[in-house]
Structure formats: structure tokens, C-alpha cells
Length: 338
Ligand code: SF4
Image (spheres, rainbow, N blue to C red):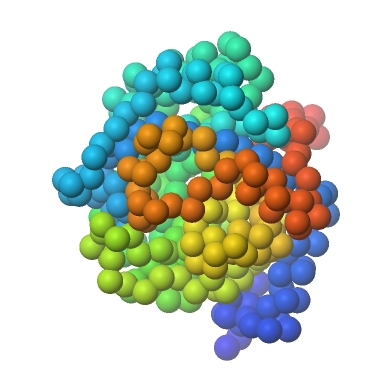
């Protein structure tokens, strides 16, 4: 195995023991040098599990006719977010299956309300939409768009029926960034039919895109999906990929995803924070809906306020008082001035 000229090597991706510890320490140091000991704290609300897409790795794909579908109302979520938001939260992420009805009827009115009543930063993760909806979301007050490319392997993207087409997905990421959004993307590490070279290529693709942040999500075989019988990701490889991404882009915001705790209960999430992550997400989806937002399985590992704050503290970190959206806005201003 050799190091490649771009610094992304199989040696690092597959590192174990002392070499792995050294890689993770370097990544943690790079994070602390750029962001100090603060992590951004965002709240996610999953506003609809309707989806017109059919991704093989997801339990909310349209072909799953047995799944009970829900769409929250903006009033219901407004009550929750305006009256019950934990103090440590600076940003909200509104997430859904690819459901344009929920975008129009729930997300946009809710964003307008949040913008007028709060200082919260607003991210959206609502899938591939048309230009008119992107503009409406932005005009309403959202500034961060999360659009994952899922895999850098175009053939697998098609085979797994990931949203639309691979070129279209990449084109939308570029277009959103060109239109002034801070775009965060991500890929799944450990998908069937993929191996370490594919995950290195996913990192290379991420590096080539105009991103402000990127996630590495471990593949977890969803029980209601065509991939239910496949093996799950190796958490050590996922954490190595996170560390390599941090070293590749010290300035990116990299989330610790809750699925890390599915891979290694009780410890996976904290290991993510030790490996270069600097964003945590609390889940505030109303309890009546959570069970049906089945990316993987019904028995979800919910990162609530208590679990998040304990994980942050246990790693010697603290919640950032500066919000993510404000952070990126100040970076943009600084870039304009220099
Ligand atoms: S991953 Fe997203 S777009 Fe794909 S089926 Fe699931 S909710 Fe829909």
C-alpha cells in the first residue's frame, strides 16, 4: 500500500492500533487549531417521511408501502421550536424525505416564522428540488443546504437508485453553492459493492466540490430495505475517513452522525468527536413521528439534549455560543474583505 500524491492513502484509511491513534490525534489537533474546543450544536426536526425517491439504503424509500407516512404541520413544529428549544442550540436543521409538498406547506412557513421570531441559524436537508423552491427557501431565511452525494461511484449511485442522477446531484451541489448557500454534503462509508478505493474516491470528490462541510455516515443495513441482509460498515474505517477528511480540509464543519452510536453503542459518537467532528445534532422530532422516520430501523438511537451535552463534556469540549450560520456568514464577510 502506498501514500497517494493527494495525501489520501489506503494506509491511513485502514490504519489500526498505534497508527490509527496517531491519525486520530492529528485530526483532533487540526480541529482544535481551527475551531478551539467548541462544537456547534444544532437541532434537527424531521418534518415529513414522505419521499418520492427510492434509495436502496433507506427505510423511507417510496417502494416501502408498509411504512406509515406522516407530515407534521408548521404550527405544531413552531410551538415546539419557539417554546421548548434547549438553551445550547444555536441552529435548526429542517429535514425530510424528498417531499416538495412538505417544503411548500411546512418548511417555508416555518422558516419565515423562525426568521422573524428568533436569531437561529437555519439549515435545510430537503433533497433535490427545483430552482423556485431553492429560492423560496433562501428568501424565507435558510442559509445552509445539506445535499449528500452518497457515493462517489457513479455506477453504484445508479444501482442503488440514489436520488435523480449522479451528474444532476453534483450539478445541484455546485449550483446551490454558486447561488450563495453554504452547502454541506456527505457520503456513506461501507455500502455493499464498495471498498476502500471507492471511499477514497468519495473523499476526492468531496474535495473537488464547493463545500462548507461534509459528513461520513457509516452504512447501516436498514431492516426495511433491499440491503437488509448486507453487512454494516466497519466503524474504524469510518472514523479513519473522518480523520482524513479533517486533515484534508481543516476548515470544514464535520458532523458526528448519530449512526456512529449504532455501530458502537455508547462510544461511537464520542469517538467521532475525538476524530475531528465539530458539529453535533440533537433530535427534536415530535415523539409521535420519530418511530416512522426510519432511515435504518424503527428502534432508533436518538441523540437528545442530555446525551449530546454529556458526550461533549466527556470529550473535554463545550458548546459553541456562535451559531453555525453566523460562523459561515462571518467567514464570508472576512473573505470579501481580504
Ligand atoms: S435517502 Fe433521502 S431521498 Fe433517499 S429514499 Fe431516503 S429519504 Fe428519500
